[in-house]
Image (tube, rainbow, N blue to C red; front, side, top):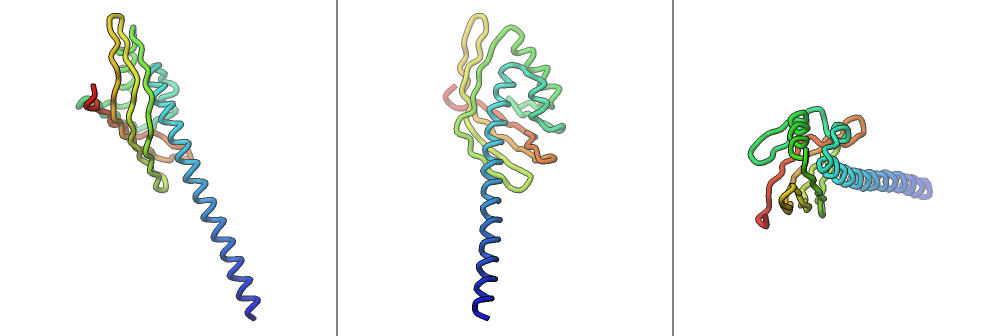
Length: 151
């Protein structure tokens, strides 16, 4: 009788530890995927790569920048105009990511530069991002960006 109870407890414990292990792995994978998406988002913005942005962002995407709100189509027009004869580099640094079920959010600093024909302007930004998990894929739903005090 004691042996049967012990075996049940052992089996239950092993089962629960597998669930915990899989949950930890899933969260770790989610964090890694989200971090990759943030890097890819920055690269796509810097290149005005609308195809990549469309894949990375949700259909209800919103960017809040310099007191203005941009949907995805407005963002495309904005970056194409800004990068028409200029170049930009941008890199997210040290993202802090929180994942809860099918929602995630992150904040991080962005470094880089914006080059025109006559000048180079360093980028020093703080961004926050909200993501939704849609059909198993993390999509960027909202980005808020602002300059840091070091600009």
